[in-house]
Length: 179
Image 1 (tube, rainbow, N blue to C red):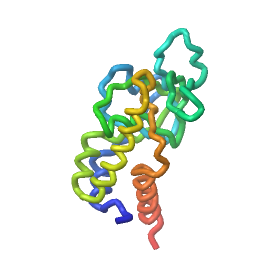
Image 2 (image 1 turned 45 degrees about the horizontal axis):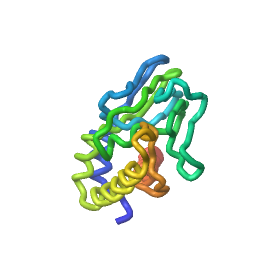
Image 3 (image 1 turned 135 degrees about the vertical axis):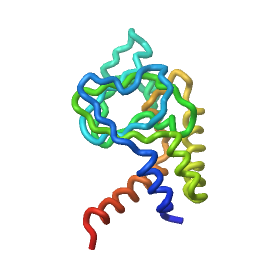
């Protein structure tokens, strides 16, 4: 089916998604902390740093090659529309870096455990998420351990997130502007 099941979407929105507010200087997670949620930036900016190598110039991302855009060392500003810590949705994950708010931030947190519970409500949603997860984990397996970080995303352009976010926007528009 083309659509995420309405019950699955409802469970995701009601149970798995939470609003997070952060003040300037707040630490949202630290290196080696067990990850429990993926974060989406709605407003504000945050600083993510792995600090893996103190001798490295951390003024920008350092990549393994032009073909592989997985950061080795990250010193990144996250802004509206970006996300972090997606691996927690697909595998047990400890944060590889730390995340701090630069200014007042409004974030959306997606709880990994409740995310998986919501996916159990519909076989098609579960199958689609499972397929995406396999591609995600395959991407992680191709990367070397020292290149993992909380910003990792697979090379898959189409995926579950685009579908979920698109459907959420369609439903939100319909709710906000009924015909």
